[in-house]
Length: 363
Image 1 (cartoon, rainbow, N blue to C red):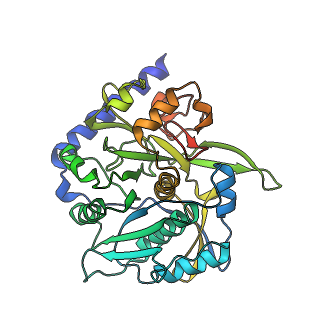
Image 2 (image 1 turned 45 degrees about the horizontal axis):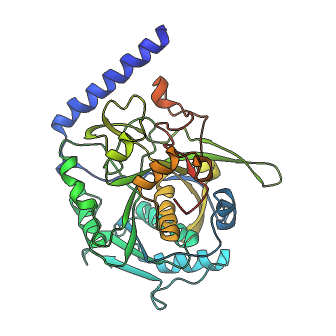
Image 3 (image 1 turned 45 degrees about the vertical axis):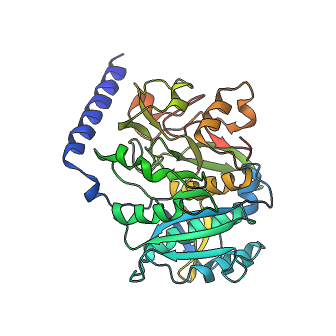
């Protein structure tokens, strides 16, 4: 009882702190951080391969419709070559500007390069293409990761009539005006927006906290000595929590999420994010094993391209149905902090992995 009381007081204090801090923190100060972690670097790919992750999540070998838009920052001048090396290594269909599979759009011509964001771009582009190899990949690069510049890139993608999914592998602290920014997450073509929930454990982040965005949390994959998939648990770094500003949307009201107290709960879904079960990525002339919730957003965007049905409304309805086990792997173990209920994985919904990880592309 005493432990639960202390945990409850911690939650109340942190919630109060977030709201108090938010009073002085505004969108003008927002700067997106890309939640990415390097596990190893070398001359050969040593992370998870496309075939392995497709087996884990029951994803098809081929497929994809429309355009997947990846929103990043700075100019990755070598991304098309990096994607070529990645595709050749894993036997994937070539994706280039020439065959109209890949397109890069700079919001500003005077955009510098940044090695850290280049890693993020390579992770997002390579793995979105790996999951949905028949889809077109559009890279939209903001001049910097300031909130204003990132939203300019989002706006460009949202106006594209060919977009079916828009991925945002970045985030930052919530701010008082964030509900006013929801209008940016409406697409001309009806594309679904996806965002990483963050890698700092318990706590809500934006834009994942937007009610118009599918927030993607993180898990850890374990494999047997023969390489076969064994289990999936919540990753300790997975971001999640209750928004300080966004009210609980209708799709969550209908599902009845415990302890949200009328506010937006995140994440909505989950995906492998643990660097120890990280992804093989080619960037900056080397092979990396990368993790972080930034890996999940573009791959969920690719799942949307495959099935054209990964909306929050459908995700929550499927989880509430009697057939929920055919849509999600329910993540029931693991934690991301000491905040008692909010920091522990459990059945149905939790603030680390949401509804769970995908085991289909049709929701």
